[in-house]
Image 1: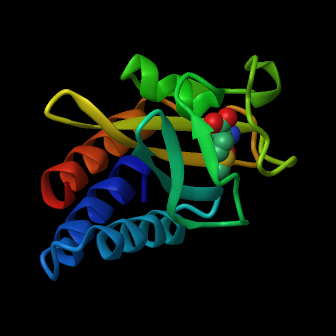
Image 2: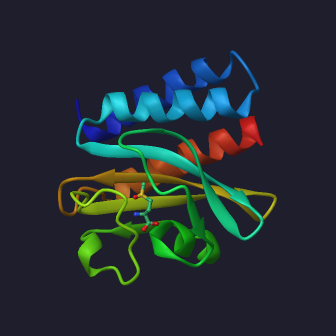
Length: 152
Ligand code: SME
């Protein structure tokens, strides 16, 4: 199965999972578990949710992570303040990268935007260099949009 086919299947499955409840925690928890279970090269998949000027750790799959990230800091905070997806092929080369897991090497962060306001981010890490590309961006942005519409 190609990566595109895997994501297409995942998006369908996510739709079915989200149909069960409007609860934010339940839906973000199942979304992170679904993505992590389909892509074993992803070492961490989860959400940070905005509380005032900080992003606070939300539902995730992976090792315990940093609890709070100020807007504008790290990859997550930069993505949130710029309101754009960031793909970081080598986290060692990203100034200000926050290393929750020292073995993480690449990362993609997609902002969750509701009515023009950033309500959180979807963050995915990998132990591999340059794991993420435009296909990941397209589908993770699609997943983020589905979640925002359903859960916020
Ligand atoms: N690396 C992120 C921090 C979150 S962890 O990757 C789970 C960052 O620089 O914002």
